[in-house]
Length: 265
Image (cartoon, rainbow, N blue to C red; front, side, top):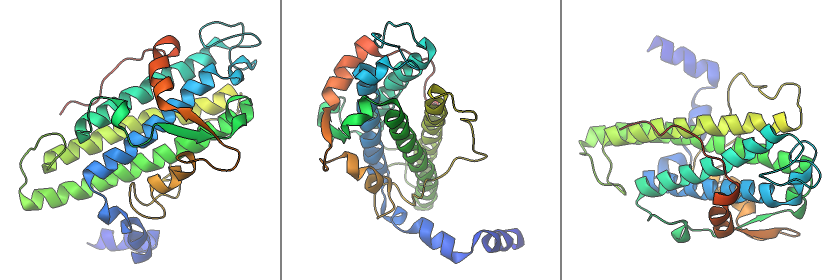
């Protein structure tokens, strides 16, 4: 208890914990999954259009006249993006399964995502958008880990048994979801670093600790992940819509396979 009191004093006491609980206290497991599916679909659309847009011909990527699968530029940099595309699709597939949202992306809440036109034509705009998105994704999964842990504690108190995908979930299932969220977050951290690598940044791995990026919840609240992604979910002044379906269906031609699987339950 003494250590706990010292920690509360150190990090700002009740003010910090009140901020963490706002919005998060209302999030359900399936709402966390739904928000994560939206984020992964957004990322899928982003990486695909980076691979097929004119930005791919930048010298730091495929080079002049190059494509996602051929070029004279920096092929390893292109492969970072090709692998990221398939990784985001696999994440979304898993999240749909555990949330019992159906097996196809066609039932997902958003089928179009909106970006500034320069996103896929200018390398600096592309990498800046990549960094902004990945930081938000990392923050979302950090919040998800904490929220799943909190939900597991409540589920354990109520003695909920293992349920089907879609819920209700037992404490053990919710603990596993926290582990899965951590495993996905680790890959998003890799993406955050590899973006600046493409621009030859001196220190792309520049953080002691990953950040919540100002997010305090996943689904509910003004500081939620859903709120952070809202600008990409509807048309803003000067933005253009890009199809999720085109990205998912086109991934087979430009994506790059990775290895490994999510943690076993």
